[in-house]
Image (cartoon, rainbow, N blue to C red; front, side, top):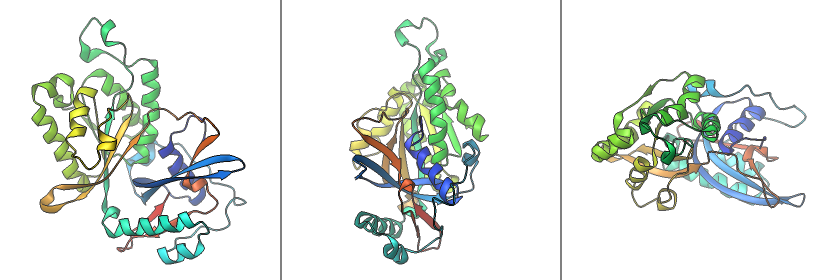
Length: 305
């Protein structure tokens, strides 16, 4: 990872560097670690899809990797990938990715729940709480969030009208050029007055996402905690613990029975770069010596990133 880089941003950057392809991340496939030169290298894998999205506009220019680092770039199917890979874990991962695609994961769309960045102290704020802004750390988190929203291809945005939430998404709106809706039900007071409407909004966004595209909503802890609990019992490990300021919960959905969305995977994205400690360095999977791609049954090209 580059200094100050977040893991999802690292994954899409490495893919762009080594393949020239801009992708948006789908569901996470797994994490592994192995020793390299006396240190543990941790590798995170996602399904990813080539998308034509405004989210790409929010990414910095990526310098192509030197041809001395890459022997060949090509698309291969699952069978050929199994033949080319040398690590047993990678072969298991390809089989897992292919099974996920058979189950419809190739049609998934992310919906992100974002908590606003670190704001000024509530107890020391003497005026209207809706006007309480981000502090310096929160503004840095908002800048970091641009790369995470872009990595997952966010093209629709819904946000609390309160200032600290608006400031959190403002850098991404400026970088991507997308528009945002500000429903009052995502504010603390609006949700407290009508929590049913808040849950219905989330349900509507989850239901519409496969047709409308990757979506994010930015709100407050008192709103996000019950919304996360409303996602059900299948992903309690990810939804029971409240989000930290600037952190995101990514919910991957596919069309379900009678138009109800089906949740297939949930993950969290940090607001700040993880510290590299105890000799453990985090890298995207494309930093490994062997990259690979898989193709869905419909012919849509997906790569394991």
